[in-house]
Image (cartoon, rainbow, N blue to C red; front, side, top):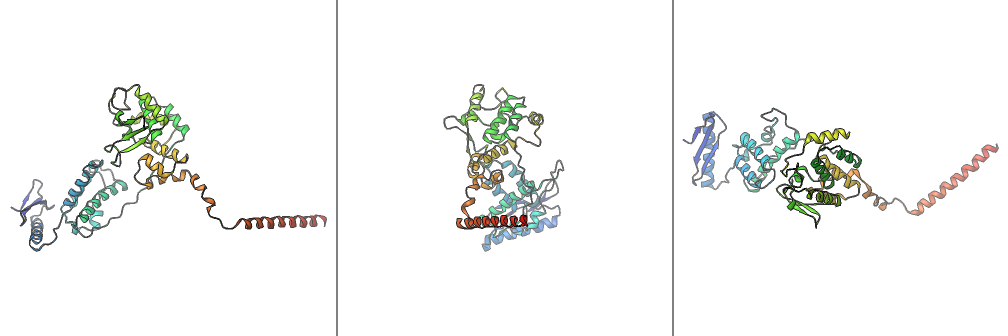
Length: 363
């Protein structure tokens, strides 16, 4: 049969096109009549493609397949697979040409299935980005002429939390785990992310060129980048090298890979140092803030920190306006002679006032 029920009672469509291609998909319904109508529609369209040279209609599921093919070597592949599975479930059977903005907006996930926790606007936006990317790939492939538009959710402004150098010293002094203290210090000196630090191996360190290499499989952007090392960072690594027992720079003592920091110990240290509302990733914000306050240009900071766009570092710009001061006198309202004349007028006015005051007193 061209349609048949699966174990869940949902009708599955299965037929062969005139060109010999086998089409198999779910009707997404338990009603046989509706499933048969969809089957007939798909089969008729396949005939039109073959006999009348009509452009073949593609489904959302086919667009999602292309989306995952593109994401195959990207770092966030697992997240994109999760997104693709969700969209396949809710609208995978739909023809791309039939989609409307409401079809996407009304099907955005709102809660996590297992826990029931409500999804944040940012998480919803990531699901939206995935389906829109799949549809854009379909458009680029010539499957459709246009795709619907769905506006992103408004997201709260990104949190920027940083500490002073005095607070950083207090934090380090309050840490009881030496390896965690070294990891924290390295983060403050380089701005590296937690995963970049914990997975760093000695073969990625070049003491002569004073860089560490963040490999593409670790970098957030998916592209390898150099991590410049200052004198203090080099000194820290030289000290760590003396107790080297494995390929990893930072470990708990036995040389094994650390999957994440000891958060309980980290927060205990922040509490003891009287530092409120501070997370490990804020060490990266602190490093960037110190750079800007010391006059590092934003474009240089972008390269140092491995950010992909200048917009990502623009949030630190308010911390230092010194780089603007040298340009403040480039725009002038009047010539110097105007100010000289204004000063003379002021002096004459002052002399007249003094004479008038004398008259009043003598009277």
